Image (cartoon, rainbow, N blue to C red):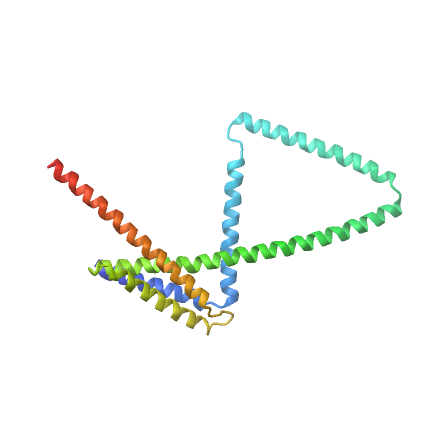
Length: 223
């Protein structure tokens, strides 16, 4: 039963990779941007919950500080209004126009900077998703070989060959999808993820083996 489940898991994950690569460029970008926005939203919510005061006394102090800040803002607004009434109308119009133009340029520069930042973050998310897909694939393939009793050092070669072959096929398939490209860099990234996944699996098997040996020794000593 474990053998069948291991093969099903490998095929299901390959199908998941194929499904992700079969989406066009706009859909793929929209999904990654939505995922990135949800992570940012969750991070901001967690940050705000950590910043909230925990005790009742600190909460009261926090509210008093907010009231003091609001009263200061009101006083500043009154002073600014009095200063504005003393300035002539022509100067006010010129200064308001200059302020509006300056604010528009600042907004445009901020929006372009935010767009560049979002594109770069989206690029990192997509690269990370590429690597993660093949990390999981390598672990599942190695587990399938393990379940079939193939546990020698050649398993690493088999796993890496299958992962590399599937990465090449996946990139070839992407060349026919609208808005997607086939790049050698993506194949190398996928293969790097497969290497990392294989190393992780080997390290886990080594740890598991040492724990089993120690547990069996303690049981034998107890008997």
